[in-house]
Length: 426
Image (cartoon, rainbow, N blue to C red; front, top):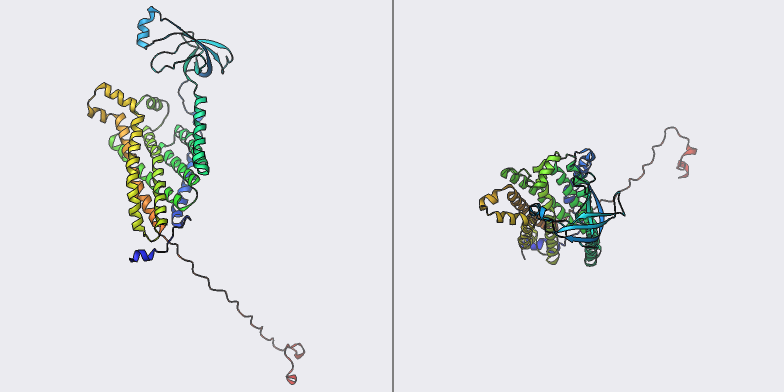
């Protein structure tokens, strides 16, 4: 048995949070709370918004009456790709004309909803419409279906994860609250998107990881590893965006946003990269911290070096699948764009260097590099803390009470008052 094995032969991992990690965790938590206070949005209502184009109301389809299209409108219908003509009778459920019926045209054209009797729909109300028709069907009302899916999802998570599943649902709700109540309004309020993303991501990470996995050494290792990986991701993403000269404006939505609000679009792009990478990074860090912890408990004679090597072997396999998942997620979100580019038959060099495709490439590369950094950082930290023993406290020496010293005898005292007997009685 070598010296390293002898040294650690009786070392068992302790689940208590080590003090060394608190030196990083406490300042990070304090900085996050301070950032939330300083960046909290206050003037979003004064921002110049997009001009309204009507009021959305809910409706219920009663009947659908299809008719033949007018020959006089054939050219216009071909241009608008209208394939069905007719009208729909809708009962209005909300708005100033609630409980009344309205007759609207059958929706047609690319992406138009296909409605049938009994469907719940969303209409747009434009009282000053030039055509004279004030209501138009724009979409299906999917609230009931979405609520059913959310309830099924919550029940499945709780049934499988029990209390941990319930805690994960609570942390998911907090994540949505941070994004919708802090991050999005703060960016609209004019704060730096990258600062908002860093503070918001740190808040999500601290709350969700500790709420989902508990206050222990393994979770703390994952938190510190995630924090370090996020810093690396931010630096790499900023370098990649500056190197490729991306400005964050690459489609209709970002163009309208840049025109209506004073937002740093390149910073918004960096914020999106950071938030997108956070979910995958914390998955990797939690897995690595838990793996090293289990290996350390199963092999109490292994030292930090051997634990690190074993954890890295698992991390490489995990990283391979996660990187593939990350790239496929970005590719799936951009699939319509990829099909459009392929249909245009443009040269590959032009396609790859266009801002839209280059943005997705930067997202994938920056997120992947952050993942690669997360594995060794978290694995080393977990292996080091698994075999780190706190310094034993030296026993305190018992306090010795000093013996009382007799008071000095006062000069000229009377023998009758002396505590000692007179000399002739001794």
